Amino acid sequence: MPCGTTHTAYVIQNVIIHLVNDLPVVVDLEELPSGADRNIRCTNVRTVDGKRPNFIHDRNSTFVFPMSVIRLIEAPQAGSETDEQFNSQAPLPALPPPRAPDEEPDEDLLARIRSV
Image (tube, rainbow, N blue to C red; front, side, top):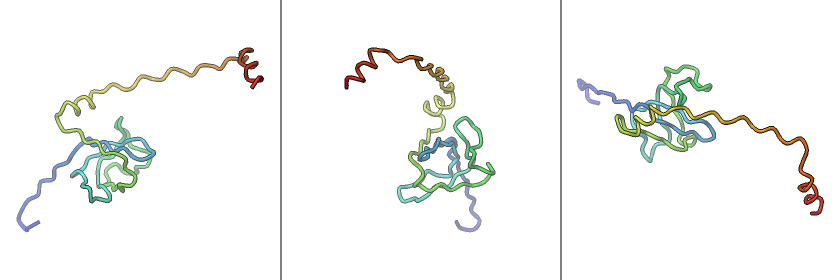
């Protein structure tokens, strides 16, 4: 950048990065990666519910994720309907408790198993 010019950094907020074999994280990016990028640099890494992930020591650091651990990058447009829907989503309902297994197996089922 030439001397004497100012550079305004724009940040793309609330970008969701889906990691391979891990839960997605929400980050802030300076720019979306191109097809030639091997990693992405981001700040403000947090879980979807806004908490600090267990692998983050200092939330204020800059983080570099290699593209090999990223499955998908989801970047809602600011002010779009998608962004508003994402931010206003209610948490998923809790799963019902598991059923207790029957104490005694069905005799007809046992007879069919024995006959095989």
